[in-house]
Length: 156
View 1 (cartoon, rainbow, N blue to C red):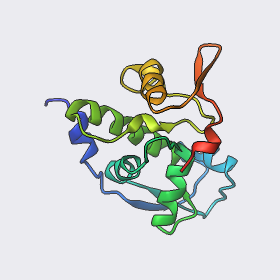
View 2: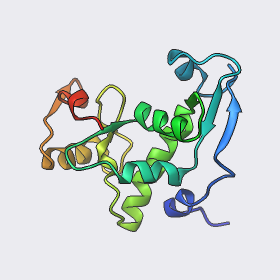
View 3: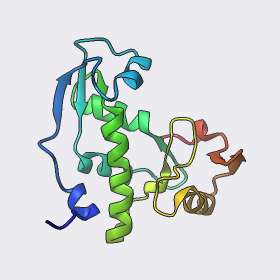
View 4: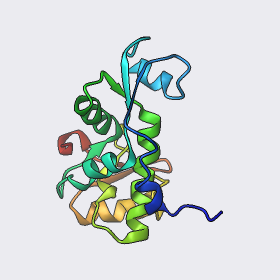
C-alpha cells in the first residue's frame, strides 16, 4: 500500500474531533498537567483541517503558538483542554501539506510556546527564520536555536 501524502493526511479526520476525559495515561498528560488538567477534565483531539484553518488565518506580522492553537480548539469544542501532542503533530502535517500542495497557509507564523522556531518544518528553522525576517520579525540565536525576539508582543 502506498504511503499517504501529506495532503491526504491533512484531509484524514481520523474520526475527530473526539472529546475525552483527561487521563494521566494520555501521551500529552504531562503537558496538560502543567496547564492544570485534572482527571475527568474534558480534552479535545481536533482533526488536522481545524488546525489548518487556524494557521491559515494568522495575519502577516502576527504569530501563534501551539498553546494558543490549543486554547482556540478547546473553546471551539467547549472543552477545558486540547491534546497538545496531536495538535503539534498536525501543525507539522499542515506545514508539510502546504509545501506539497503549494497552498497559501503561512505555517511559518506558528512558533513554539517559548518563541522558538521549529526545526521540524520543511527547510528547518533556517527557512522559517527567512520567512519571518521577510515579514519584519527580529530573530535571535541562542546556542543552536532560533527565537523570535519579543514574540509575546506579536501573538494573535
